[in-house]
Amino acid sequence: MLETRFKIALLVAVIAFTSFAAVPALRVFFKGVAPPPEDPNLPTTPVTVEASSRRSDQPVKEEMVLIAAGPFIRGTTAGGFDEQPMSAVDLDSFLIDRSEVTNYQYQQFIEATGHRRAAPPARYARNLMRMSGVNQPVVYVSWDDADAYCRWKGKRLPTEAEWEKAMRGTDGRLFPWGNDQDPLASNQGLSKDGFEVAAPVGAFKKDVSPYGVADGAGNVMEWVADWYAEVAYRLPDLRNPKGPEFGTFKVLRGGGYTSQGSDIRITSRSKMVPDFRDETIGFRCAVSGDRKGGSVTVTGGAKVTGNQNNRG
Image (cartoon, rainbow, N blue to C red; front, side):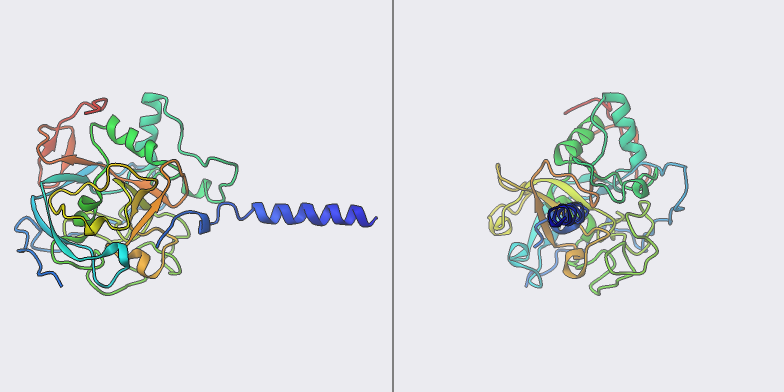
């Protein structure tokens, strides 16, 4: 009898333990420069992104935002060791997706290429059904999945520096909306914002950068191109930096719907092994500014032309 009770107790313990396998604890290792001249290409009035209906089946419009060449302030003295020093970094022009890649957009990629679907690597997926809306950001994608999608679109993942400039602008602000924390400004943890998981992209009107790029401080964390280095900001390359050539971890940028406190700061840097997949990680794509053409709508009416199967 005692042995039977012991076996039952052990089974209950195992079930209880495995129920936490998807808990964010294993997800991610989180961890005085004069401002450059004001970017003349920044909008003169605040840019807002219209809130999406939570149950809308109409896919959001794919748009890219043009980020003009020039300097911006990278890093902050208010952050951790890997966010310092604060310095002026100069970037060539580039385009970046206004919104995170959605489930609808990623499904088109799967159907066209036969790439594996966005799903957890194991049976643990507490919120999978609640995060399958057409306009919610795609999650459970590895770095390689994200890279493959961007290449299929004729794009690439943004560099870490490009992501930070697109979300921060040129004035050194700590959040897309300014320098003050606001628990209701983005889809973040411990806030009563109406979303228990990822929201439809662009649902938070304050979580929009000076350039009009949405969801930098919330919703899902995003893969970028760079390998992670704790001392990356201390390297001398201050023009179009691309991080170290090799590494163990890829960089994740931005806050997610479970992020709290300093983790939603635009300068905050995270890292994870590139084959990791989780319900809090998505991505968006970028294009170098010298690309010519017109299949993707760009802010201001310009167009980017690209063969969707172009891997260049």
